[in-house]
Length: 198
Length: 81
Image (tube, chains in turn green, cyan):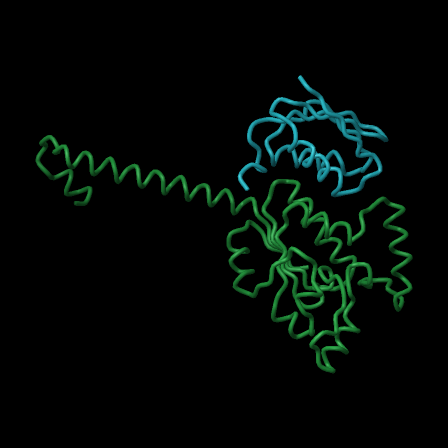
């Protein structure tokens, strides 16, 4: 029965069953509205970061924002694809790899301490210089921010496809991270307020 | 009311607010946290953090070492997770 029908209907007291049914439907609608506004509030409080770049300075920025967001009480999801995977790589392993994968294993930096810079890299000479500047400024290193992020409950997902392209295996990655694909990222991005590609 | 102190001098962004959020989580509502920090961005970051989580900035003193007092209020945004 639509609203107009209700207006046109003769004014007689509704039956007890109608009142009860209406009350039940109203309660259901109220709980759905509450659930929706909770979901909306949650999405405003979340952030998703795609870490694509493999340079230390760029990944440092990604982890500074991730840990700050976690400190702000936000739900943080980080997705590591291609060169960004180096941030959550912990060791090299040759187990079960073919010639090409072995070559990639040697070429891909095995952890956050071995990454170059996006500027002033100077064939790798810039790295110790930049690290000294960071220490002098009391800025946390990338390696310690990665561990801090994990400790603070930042969700970290390594892209399985780019791992396979680069010949990386799960045993080479940081403990406690997840493995997923584009749908995993999109699901997280859709339920968060902002998404960054770094 | 109980007051906790936290030394964040020499720490750089984002560490002061990381330490503050970790400490505030262990405190009860109404408790106060006294923080000392030297990061030049500390005031801006602290104000944003307090606004986000619904706590209260009771005092702030500028200087080479900044001093702030925060009061923990009701269930903050860290509660919903």
